[in-house]
Image (cartoon, rainbow, N blue to C red; front, side, top):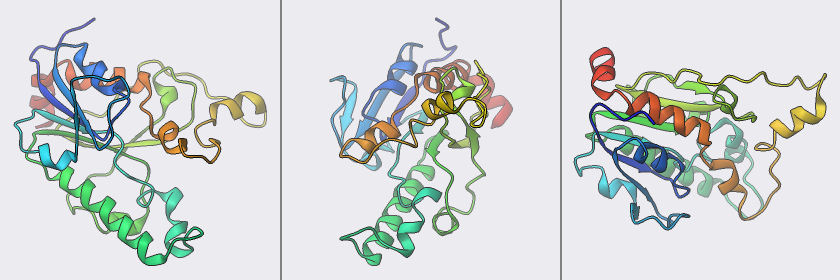
Length: 226
């Protein structure tokens, strides 16, 4: 496996699965994950707590993989207008503002290279975020050998956009309905207490691409995108 020219200290925020952490660690980096929940793999390289408490610890790169996005993304905008049963409009607005604050704090962190993952946002969320936030790069798992549909946005600072590494041919709904349904499993996940975990889990193919392309040649990337 290809090693990095210069190992980096990397913080993987808002991740419990360890998928992204392990991908970067396999390439020789000093990498830690951080989340309010414990690491699923029991790793001793997981910090349990608020990622914002660790942004000033001298990292070379920050990758925030699954910040709370329910109120920020387009799929959740309807709840701002018609709250779910048992919830109020004020609670929805408060969750929107809390999610935007976490995103903004991470984007403004004193870390040279930053990637923040988030689905496509609605305009109300975008209005609460930093003015210098660039347009996201939208990628799909099937660009990286994973047979799933899930548009994922990466907001990048001094990191190159990801390049497809194993592009599959997605099925067309009219021609291959069963295969198309299988590829749509993320969106079709049934309601339940663990639905959020299934929908937010990092794809191994994307994690490998991030580690290869962002962690392999940090000095070269900085020269081109600094």
